[in-house]
Amino acid sequence: MPVPSSAGTRSPATPLAGVRVIDFGQYIAGPGAAMVLGELGASVIKIEPLAGDQARHIGRYGESMVRAYNRGKRSIALDLKSEAGRAIALRLIARSDVVIQNLRPGVVDKLGLGPAEVRARHPRIIYLSISGFGSSGPSRARPGYDIAAQAESGLMSVTGEPDRLPQKVGVPIVDAASAHLGAQAVLAALYGRERSGTGETLEVSLLETAMHLQAATWCEYLGGAPEPTRIGDGQPHNAPAADVVPTRDGHIVLSAYAEDHWQRFCRVMGREELIADPRFCSNAQRVAHRAALREVLRECLSSYSTEECVALLGRNQIVTGAVRSYREVLASPDVAASGILVEAASADGQNYRALGLPYRLGDAPRPAPAAAPDCGADGAAILAEAGYSEAEIAALRQDRVVA
View (cartoon, rainbow, N blue to C red):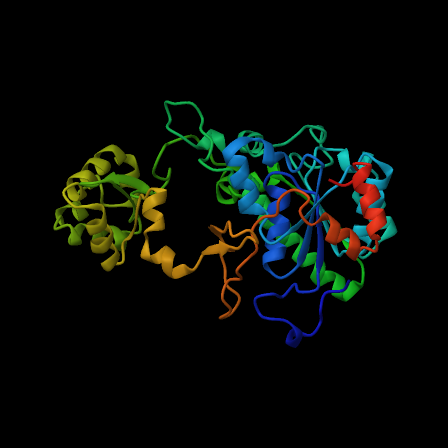
């Protein structure tokens, strides 16, 4: 199905209305990419194994993954190892514009559902594969998870305290970023298809995504800089920059390394003598005397509450932020005003709050998505739309081709 070409036929909030997506994804990256397209108006069918997405079986956090990255989709559960199951999948693909998968390396090819076979049959299809290490290197057959990409991209080597073990980022940031980059690639390919009439085979790897998240640091290293190391808070070449400073009741993070910002900070704090202090008179000197600088920051701010620090420094155009817990973030008036929290509506009334897309399209409100589906919840309706009769659907269920 082509992308609609008339802007007047769709809402600004649903630019992908009419686009159909097949999602073979598991966990975060693949399902997340498909969900982004769904939130932009595409119709998304999630094809799961009979037992469901692997995330459905790893406890409470897995359930949260399903809720977070599968809103607004419909689900059908198929035995793709059976000829009949593969035939159903191929029929659904034939009616679609985009296929997304992040299964173990080689799985879709063994099933006859890989990009080469699918696009040979349907050249207009846009086929996105998300893998751990890409399809061309010696690690192409290795399973790839967020944590492996964090480790092998250098990200863990620069995260944490200098005298402690390397640390992962606190959330699966590489998976989440790969989902958005995958959706971005699909959007580019959809636009290109409008000009060429032909689809595209797309690849995103967690390894490349993790490196891309460190682009500035990598460019510095590639330009001849020394190997970057862990320093905890702060930035290696600027000070104060991303420094965590204790307050009377918590912590803030502070950046005031530009000379006019540092001088303004000193004046606001009533410590103008620090401007001419030879330890702090330039960014280079502040970096060289970072330990003394941090002691000065603590002296200046520890008597203030976190909120008082944010108000005072923000009022004087000095970059700062309160280090907030999730509970505190939820109570933030900025978060409330953003509208990023959406209500995912379930047919059984079990609605839940989730995060919408982190951007707006014009003045359109963020869509109110449907809740993530139960495994196979829409199988009968999807099969009927694809042309299967009630008798055929009943037989497929009897034969355990469809859950």
